[in-house]
Image (tube, rainbow, N blue to C red; front, side):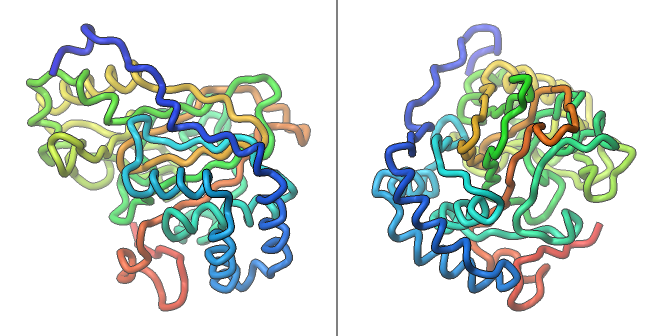
Length: 319
C-alpha cells in the first residue's frame, strides 16, 4: 500500500451504470401491474413484485444479480432512465428491483417503520446532518453505521432533481480507497478502537459525536474488507485511531464520485463497501425541490428476526 498522495483515483467503471431507457416500455408495464395493488398489504405487494421481477429485461436482471453477488469497485449501481410515474409507480419500481437484491425493511425510528420514504428538504432541518437537510453538506457515512442491523443496500430513486443543479450525491468505495490508505494505519482500522454516533433521526438531535457503539472501521477480509465509517459522528479512542481516521477521510475524499441524478435515475449503494453523502444546495420550498424515493434492504429477513415482529419487516431495535 502506498501513501495517499502517490496515486490517482482509478477511472470510473462502466459496469456501474446501466442504461434502462431502451426498456422503459416493458418496465412501465410491470410497474403498472403492481401500482394497482394496495400498499397496506405490504407482504402481498412485495411477493407480487418478486414474481414480476422475473420478467425484468435480461440486461437489467443480469446487472442486479451480478451486483448482489459481487458488487463492483465503485460501490454502487446506477440504473438510468427508469420510468417515473407518480408515487405508486415509483414504489412499484423500487419493489421490483429490490427483489433481485434482498428484502426491503423499515426502521421504527424512521418514519414509523415505513418501507418507502420521500426524501425532500425540510425548512426545520436545513443545517442538520439529515437526509432532509440542504444548506450544509451531508457528510460521507455508512447508512445506520451505529446500528446492529445495517442495511445491505440503500436505494435512492430520483423523482425530481435539484433545479439549481447542486445537491449532488457522493459515493466513496472502500475498494477504491484501500490502496490509498497508509500501511501503518491499516492494522488500527481493523481494531475496535472507534466510537460512532447515533443518527439524528434516531434521537441524536444535538448531533453529538461518538455517543454510540465501539467498532472497527475495516472488517472482514483484509484484502476486500467491509467499511463502517461516519465522517461526522465517529471518533477514535486513541491518538493512533484518530490518525487512522484522518487517513480514511483523505482517501474517501480522493475517490468519491459526485453523481448528478436525473428524474428516473436509481442509485443503489452497497452499504457494506461504500459510504455516501450529499452536497449542499439551496431549497426554494415551491414544490419543485429535489425529491427522492428511498428504500433500505437487508440480504435476508432472517438476519433481523430477533428485532422484528413475526410477519413484518420493521426493525424495532431500541436506543
